[in-house]
Length: 157
Image 1 (tube, rainbow, N blue to C red):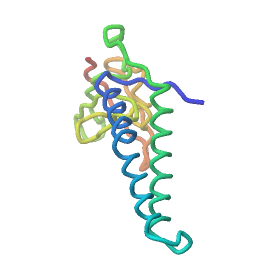
Image 2 (cartoon, rainbow, N blue to C red; image 1 turned 180 degrees about the horizontal axis):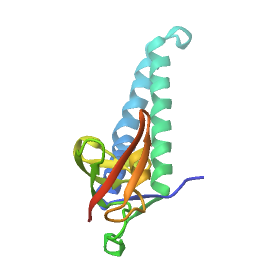
Image 3 (tube, rainbow, N blue to C red; image 1 turned 180 degrees about the vertical axis):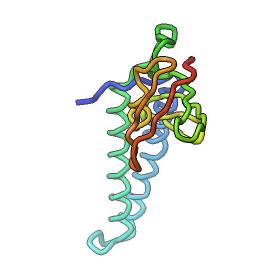
């Protein structure tokens, strides 16, 4: 059973492109590698054949997982989102109460998360702690090394 995940148009396109790459290019390459290894003789002692079959199995598992993700993927209509609360696709600026450090994140689905570009998963501890909060609210977030308190200083799209 697939669960519903929300993506931006860009994130969903990226997933579809990856699936297309795996099916249209990687799958035929895996089949060719198996055929070449099979042509080299006795399959019972052919490590190259075993490796090619295992690689094909891993590829098929990845394709299956991507297809399942895409079956539950929904595009978020940003025009329908409420800017008064932190939701998926919210751009949030937060201030650490302990040290005064300010950070900015865009909350996104797991598949689009990329901390280096400021995209934080809604399922991460900080993402979960911020969801549903309003401007000026304090969020107490349990992280692996304790509890961090943040104040929400800005919410935008």
